[in-house]
Amino acid sequence: MKQCVSFFPLKIITYPKGEYGLEDNPVEITPAEAVAYEDAILAATAKENRFFENDRGLAEYIHGEALNKKVYSLYPSVEIVDGELWGVMTAGLKECLSREETSELLDFVTG
Image (cartoon, rainbow, N blue to C red):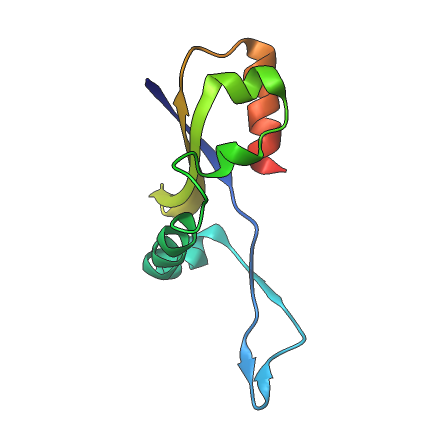
């Protein structure tokens, strides 16, 4: 099985705690500011990844039949690149994807 890694920019929104719990006013933070939260995001992502019903991760939600046959697994994470936090999606592939299938997978990941 081949492994493919794709990086994508993140839009990060935080909900600060106020006097009575979470504030109603979300605050967007930059990818550079989000670096401080990398460990917490990695821990939360690892925790969520354990809840998938099988070892395919997000790949179990791919609806396109051809793409679903070629993509065995799909797991999200984050990584620091040039001082900014980026989203990372790691795909386990049974076989190579065509250009159209790669585009379809990227649309699925970023959608």
